[in-house]
Length: 279
Ligand code: SF4
Ligand code: SF4
Image 1 (cartoon, protein in one colour):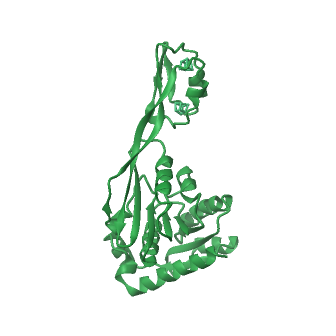
Image 2 (cartoon, protein in one colour):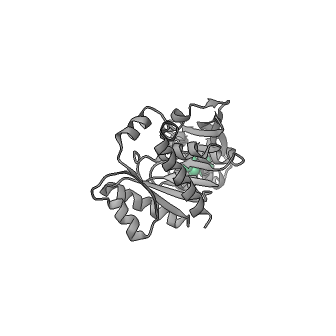
Image 3 (cartoon, rainbow, N blue to C red):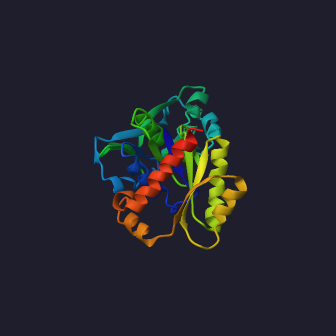
């Protein structure tokens, strides 16, 4: 069973929820798809195996064969190609590796080469298999790294907890594509409710069963809870604002391993998710 944990913005507690769910599962898999700033490994401290390099294809031009017809320049939606005089210039840093320019060149002047964009690490922390991707700064898209993470973990033990990137962009879509259930983590603020709405629209578009985890709850107003009620989203747990939980997390400790109350709360959340997903 694959559980994707997502939130419309960073700082909601998405990674805290993900690592605690993995911890209470005992045996399972944790995948850190937040490839621009992976930090789940700080909690698990795994022994890494040899890393994989993830590469994508970028075009290479044979200037002798290029006639300067500009077909490729006009095709590229990302402005990664330009003609300077009669010489084709390729801006690899903004190429999205769609391969289209190679196909539209009428003179076969373009071919492709590999370009490294990041790495994937795997290892173990007790009985939990850990996978973590890291995008090299400046690269345009982490999607190929997430594809590699999902592919490598396909035979790993269940439950698989997917710690998604924040937001609702392509990397999040790739992270939830195979998920059986999506957990939406949100804060009790107007901003929190707005970002919850974005990820709610995304999981609805993907037709994924989903429920909410409301984090940092206080006795006051909770716009995220109001949104859940209005949209009929089940709130699986409301985690109270608790400086002790914040301290454990910022010290890189997994609350469920340190305190029996948190163990009970996250074990109950995992049970609820498994029950909801089976419906
Ligand atoms: S592969 Fe796609 S994105 Fe890259 S330069 Fe060619 S057309 Fe542009
Ligand atoms: S499509 Fe081919 S021939 Fe035309 S400018 Fe691009 S590389 Fe040169």
